[in-house]
Image 1: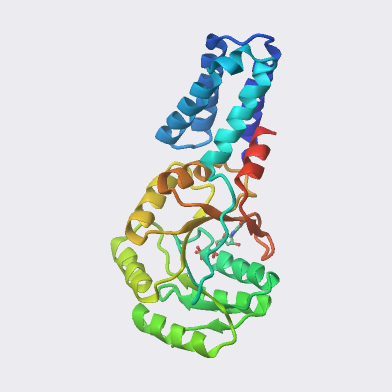
Image 2: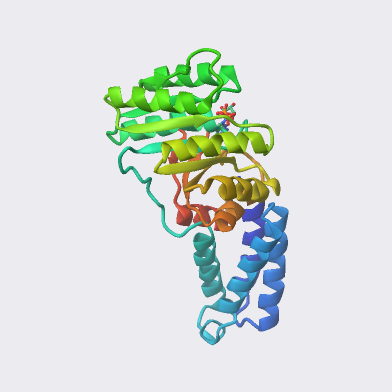
Length: 294
Ligand code: GDP
């Protein structure tokens, strides 16, 4: 992920560093090249535009241009702005009681896998997570979650076969959770191929019933330009509390990662970096910024 963007940015910065003295024209040229690189990496147009404007304004500051190593300073400005765009610091999960976490997102984004990965991660942190299957549209998803729960070694709630009423299932699950020794509840919800109003309404009703501490939008980092509309739509309907970006190990261009946090103003809390259950980690904006800049 990001190798194309990283290569292009490194070229631009190598060029800037090569200049002993940097002029406004050098900066304007460099920022034009950076903007192209961001757009080619699928960063949404307005996000790229705003980002470039902020970097440029700082780079054109007197202290930078008159400084000893202007090229390096500009790289630092870029790194800091990129970190800010990705959210600044890592934001931990809110695990206030009853510590309910709803996982939402489109089909195939990695919701079910990420639910299990999150359970494994929490278990390693000394918590006692519970997995709860609330995807009533795809029977295979319930079995998939139950299988993953066995692999992780955590209890799993499965709805009564054929049950279609998600609120009833939510109520049964919440009652079940009270009887379990667990202290964090992870609800895997239904997805669709694309945003679909009845589904959003169903998840919204479940959100209102559960009053979860976290609603995490699971999104495939390779979503491309569609990422912004997906994130905006889910956020408007469900008031998400954070994002889980999956498939950061892939070779896609990765612009979604840079756009989604910006359009929702919600932190990316975790990253999926492979298919295995332990390939999942808290998201650190500065580390990703560092990787992108090489
Ligand atoms: P859901 O429909 O949103 O529940 O998606 P799934 O959890 O079933 O995941 C869809 C596919 O994406 C599965 O083949 C997962 O193994 C794969 N997947 C999920 N997360 C990652 C990740 O971080 N990296 C990679 N390479 N694959 C992932």
